[in-house]
Image 1 (cartoon, one colour):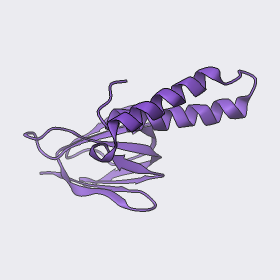
Image 2 (spheres, helix red, strand yellow; image 1 turned 180 degrees about the vertical axis):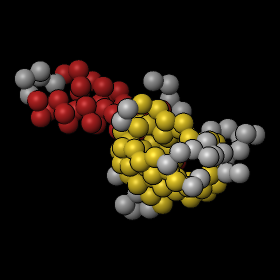
Image 3 (cartoon, rainbow, N blue to C red; image 1 turned 120 degrees about the horizontal axis):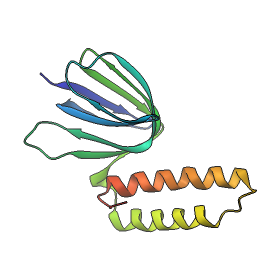
Length: 137
């Protein structure tokens, strides 16, 4: 028995296939999903989702930019603000964007709350893309 997994972004469907295991970046931590999982609706944080089609294959990484996931009857529907498969992300560009976002977070003024929020969001997106592309963070 397998899971039917769909990752849907506003501009495209990033993943629509069967899988045996899924790990989601929920807002409360990582959530692992196997067949027979109890019904679940969870908010997703910006982070990396990992999918394994079967036990003989390696994990596929997908960078998610926040959204929601619903699990019911061995079907996982993931609606996100944006998503990219890790193998479609250029590792060196992702590394450069991550380093730039990290530097920006460290340089923002503590009293400028709006700039802190924007820098933190950019950092999380850059970190997710870098991790999904295979970079170690």
